Length: 474
Image 1 (cartoon, one colour):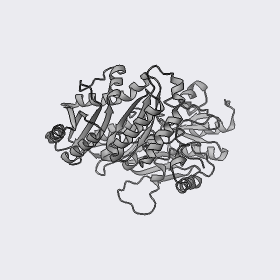
Image 2 (cartoon, one colour):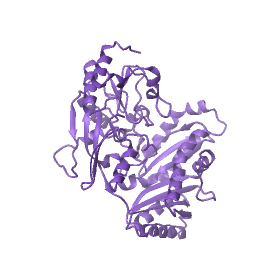
Image 3 (cartoon, rainbow, N blue to C red):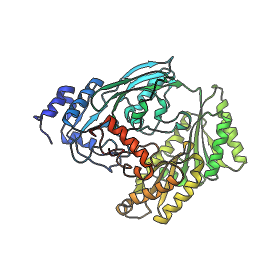
Image 4 (cartoon, rainbow, N blue to C red):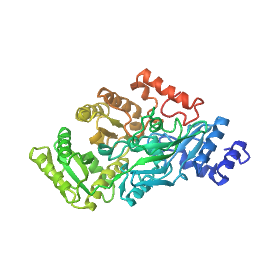
C-alpha cells in the first residue's frame, strides 16, 4: 500500500481534502469486493469528491499520471462492474458525496439530481412534490442514481415506464480527460444532432463519469391496484397480461412471474414471507396497475379481468390486494424469493431477456437443458415477464457439493446464453456486463457491432483508463 508521501496521492488530497482520500486497508476492503463476493480487486486509494469540479480535478490528475479510475456508486452491482482489477493500479472514485437535489421543476415534471443521490431519496423528493419517479428496484434504499444510469437499470416498472435510459432528459458527465460536458437539458424535444447522453447510459463508467442528471417525473397515480394469482402455465400468464392491459387501458406497471419453488424457498427462509394462496400451483403472477380516477375503478377493472381469466381456465386462483399493506406483503414475498435462494446453497445466475412472446418456449428449452446438464438441479426462473426479462437462476441439487456445482457456472451460463441467443434475446437484461459477461459478449455480437463499440471507447478514452476490464476491451 502506498504511503502518505506518495506525490500522486498527495495531489489527490490537495484536490478533494485529505480526509476524502482513503488508503487504509480496512477502510478500503468493502470497496474491493462485489455484493455476490465473486470478484475482488486492489486499488491505490478510494477518493470521495464532493462536487463535479472535484471529480474533474481527480480525473485530470489520473489522466496525467495514467492511473485507471473505477467509478463506484452504491456498490450494489451484480456483475463486478464497480470492482477494480487485481493489479492494484486503479483509484476508486466514489460518488456518495455528490448527493444533492439541484432542482425540482414540478411544472416541467423534472428533477435534477447528483449522481450520488440514493434512488429512494429521489422517489421521496418526487413524492413530496406530488410527483412520481418510477424507477424502482430491490436495492433502491442503497443504490445511487449514477450507478442506475451507468448500468441502465430496469426494475419492476419497466412495463409501463421503460428502463433507466427512458427516464433521462439530460446528463452532466466528466470525460476521461477531465473536461465536463454539461448536457443537463430539461427538454423533451431536442432534435439538434446526436443524442450524446445515451452513450453514457449503460456504459458502466467506461466512457466517463456521470455526475448529475435531469430525470423525468410523472403525476402521482390516484389509484393503485395489485393482485397475486396462480396461473395454469406460462402461456396462460401471457394471455392474462393481455387481458389486464386491455381492461385497465394500458395502466399495468408491473407483471411478474414466480415459480412454486421460489415461494417455497421464501417462506422457508425469510421471516414474514407468506403465500397469499395456500394451495400449491406451478406458476404465479404478481401484477400491479396504477392510474385511474381514485374512485376504485382501476381495482374493479383488474378484478373483472382476473375473473374472466379464471372462467377461461387461465387463472386458477387469485387474491386482489384489499389495501396497501396487503400489496406490500405481496411485493415482500416477491423480493423474499431473491433473498431466500442463497440459503439453499449455490446458485448459478442468469439475467436474460427474450421477446415476451418467446418466454414460454425459452423456459421449456432452458429448463430441459438444466435437467440434462445437472440432474436434480433446482431452477428458480422468476422476474419481469411483462418485459421479457427473467432471472433464470439455478440452485444446486439437494445435498450437492457447492464448490463443484459453482465450478460449472461458466458452462451453465454458456448453455443458457446459447438458448437465449437462438430466441433473439439478450444475455444481460438489467444488471449490466461488468466483468461477469465481458468475455461472453463477443460470442453474440457481430464483429461490426463490436468494432463500433470499440471505436466509441477509443474516441472517448484513448488511454483505456476509465473502468478498465469492464464491458469491452479496447
